[in-house]
Image (cartoon, rainbow, N blue to C red; front, side, top):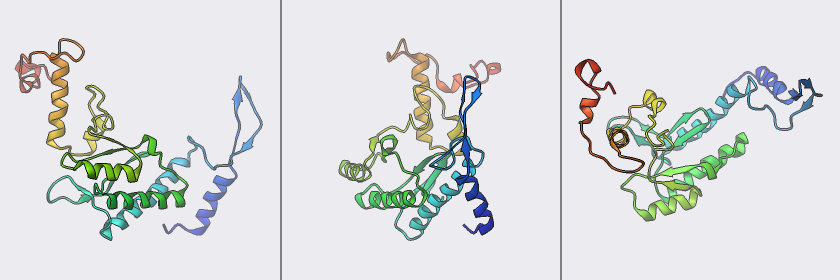
Length: 218
């Protein structure tokens, strides 16, 4: 990435010479050295993590530039998005096919071999476009070795009726997703009990009006 060699040496010394001690019942134990570099909470770890993440971004951008990877468009004239990073989470977009899945997995393997960071496929989930055929879904899921889901609610922070405030502050979400959120909130508001449907006595647009205009100010 073009860092001066002297600076790299200083950072490596910080990583290789770091030591820790454990406080037990108010007493500090003897120092010991880590065998796997910095630990979570070390002031340097977050900055180094960003540098490693840039390596993954570079691999994905390179594959997209070569035409190996297809991204997703938020609008017809907008740019293709190949990946999004949220702290230590990553959302990657690609073609739902065996070829597309293999390219994505090869990129992840190359990143693993360079950085030492391994993808936990047991905690990873793949979402498909509603138009994707079942055989294509099965191919991609088999190659990547991750579970699939038809609803991104949990990933976006939507258990029950929670609002994905962080995602909405970063991205212009699709109208269909907003309609799904409004539908869930309306069901929660009017239901007779857990999972029991009720009558919607007032239209959603009126509930969203300010209280000064006889609404509820949602």
